[in-house]
Image (cartoon, rainbow, N blue to C red; front, side):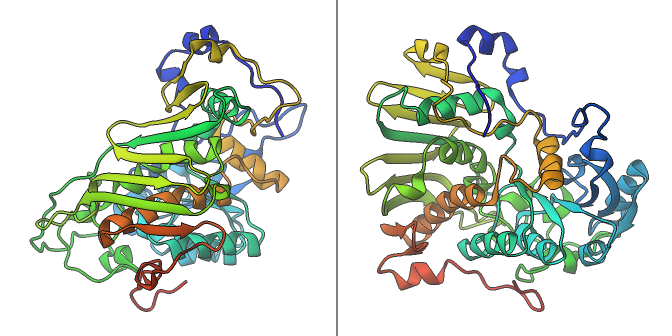
Amino acid sequence: MAGKSAMSRRGFLALGGAGLVAPYALTSGALGAQGQPPASDQVAVGMIGCGGRGGGLGCGRVLAVCDTWRNRRENLAQRMGATPHADFRELLDRKDLDAVTIGTPDHWHVPIAVAAAKAGKDMYVEKPLGVSIHEDLVCRQAVRRYGRIFQYGTQQRSSAHCRYGCELVRNGRIGEVKEIIVIAPNSGPGGNTKPMPVPEGLDYDLWLGPARWTPFTGCPLGGGNWYHCYDYALGFIAGWGAHPLDILVWGYDIHKAGIWEVEATGKIASEGRHDAVYDWDVRITFGNGVRLRFTPGGDHTRFIGTQGWVGISRGYLKAEPEELLKSPIGPDEIHLPVSHSHGGNFLEAVRTRVDPVSFIEDAVRSDLVSHVGDLAVRLGRKLRWDPVKEQFLDDPDANRLMRRPMREPWAL
């Protein structure tokens, strides 16, 4: 475990708002020391997904890139000096790769991650994790069964102020936790439903992959429209919620808090291509009495205790009373793992075979909050979730919806 993370409030404020946010691009410099080559010189990487988030995930020694868009893979391959691949299975078959980054649309995250684990590749997977609870559980099983390194794309775990805020909570500085509030940006209605010609250079059938077949309506053209289409994602309840929900599970063990009583409301558009839940209001009462409320709005996690509160986002750390932010974490107290670079931390984990800061179990735990909330909205009734058995209690319909059908020939 890491050493001290104590820092004064003045020290945090001196960093400035922008400086507190971990960079999205994965950088791997400065890992080498005293003549030892940096991990970036040792780890051979293939990038799966070359547009948007995926195109910014270059780390290590990039030898191969893959995308269903020909221009994206060819342009990135030229910039990286790498070999382009049209099919991720060809890239995973390569014997010269140690690891992959997976920056595809959400519905591909778990199928490719599972295939990567079976192929003996470590992986950096963009958030959120799966489009179903079943996918999350299968991914975790595959990562552990095949002994792979998994880093989740929740970059705030490599920010000192996020770590320190969670350590304050875990070490009782706010007293006993009573309530937790999580806020994430909203999804919304819209999206074209009129079929369009498939653009030149896009393998649309492979882009769809395990998702049900629908005519091309422009979803993969950019602008993130697919984020709000339930065929490909849960919407921002998961896609952006993954960040503040990750802070939730870093600061508090919701999987040890007893049975979850889940109630939720929300909207699903009846027109347009966007059919992800929006305007959600998810309320969870844990078996130990702690309450969680998850709603759209900003990007923030607040832990409220009997002696104060701590509020954490990727851009700031706040507390009441403010004196909490001057509290050092003692050597015998709980210290969370230290990472100064999310990509560098991943490469170091590949080299040392020690779990990185955003490991698979916590990825699943945070993702489950999105899933149970989404299903509570869609079913329109109270649900009870057992975090130990990882199933809904006395609700066969809800348990059936833990799994989504996959279009042949795709399967987990």
